[in-house]
Image 1: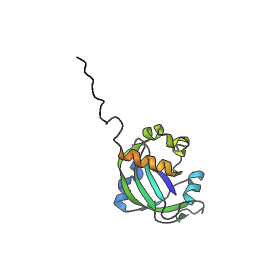
Image 2: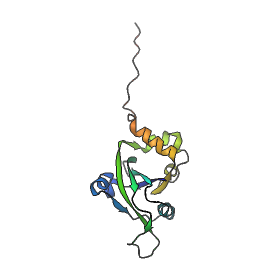
Image 3: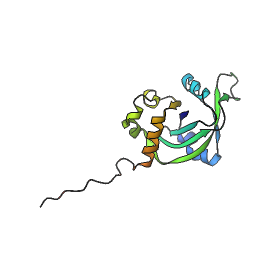
Image 4: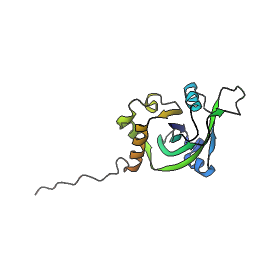
Length: 149
């Protein structure tokens, strides 16, 4: 499976994940996000999305454990999972690009913007990979100027 995790970069950025070599993903409170979190299995891929002002997928991580009960939650209702960085994307893929790509028409990323953990299908993953390899919008080559004499 493939997942997308959202986090404010000032709270825990992809840089911090790389620096730390991994982390336990805690603090998810939304019931639907918790349902998704409980479905994560060791080896699943995770798109790391910076929320806040950045609003972009910036890297790929992987689950290094199955989801398990959060040991810091005395209520026993919350799950957590251990993740590790895999790679930083060649360039961030912004939400504005994602909105324009047809693969995301039914994505929870666009339909439920406050959801912090969500599934990603293989077409969406391929689109992110492709967009990350492409030149950023607005930086492409200009069309040749036609000069008429």
